[in-house]
Image 1 (cartoon, rainbow, N blue to C red):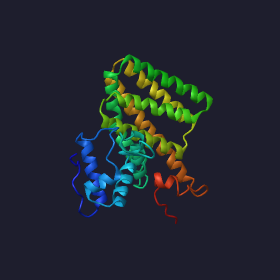
Image 2: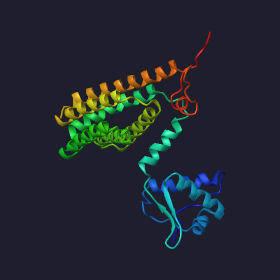
Image 3: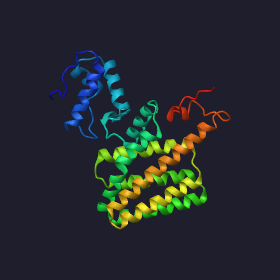
Amino acid sequence: MKAMFAPARQDKTTDIIVERIRTAILDGKLQPGDRLPCEKELGEQFQVSRQTMREALRALEHLGLITLRKGSGGGAFITAVDQQVTVQGLANYLYFQNLTTAHLSELRRLLEPHAARCAAEHMSPADRQALEEINRQTRLAIAKGDLDQVTRCEIAFHSLIAAQTQNPILRLMLDFSEKLLSDFKKLLKPDQGFTESVLLAHESISQAIAAGDGTTAASEMLDHVVAVENSLVSLQTGRFRDADSAPVPACSLARLIPLPTRTHA
């Protein structure tokens, strides 16, 4: 059988192997579920040691491109990268980039109104009913004080709207922004009044989508995004104002939402 991969003889051999296998996936030569040749055969194709080949396979597994299975019928199998793993990886990177609510809101102001307009124009009757059901479940969760369920419903609401763009890049970025938003909320802990105002905004957006009114849906979504940003900034400012009496832990809030340096006279 003709070898799929040429020898890897340059510096950073592991990186070269990873990139060649990634390219084979991009070219369609490898599909999810396909099994790679065994470690020994791959090592011979790339002309590297089994240890180097093993390191490359571990790197591919870390990237989510393959799954390594042990035992009979085991091996390295191509797998579709999980979206939630990708979103979490992006979030982990940004936690160390002096991320602020303004950064997040800027992204949301650009993308969320467009998604709402798409939803008004393309959402099926079944998905519109699902959107209304999400809002109903949110209201029940608020009444029960189940904040975890409220968060899940809020994310589901925006995720269903994002799906209407039918653009996997936009959907990834929108789901990613919701992940970051949920992290901000966990740290800033908005009160029930904030949660209820979010639900009211979601209901207004849902009504515009149900009416097929893309302009109103986009406008309502933009107002919602700006209102959320203003509320979170207000919470952050309040924490800073009270910093002398109740310092913000540097290992949590200051990492995700850096506060300005305060100068004392």
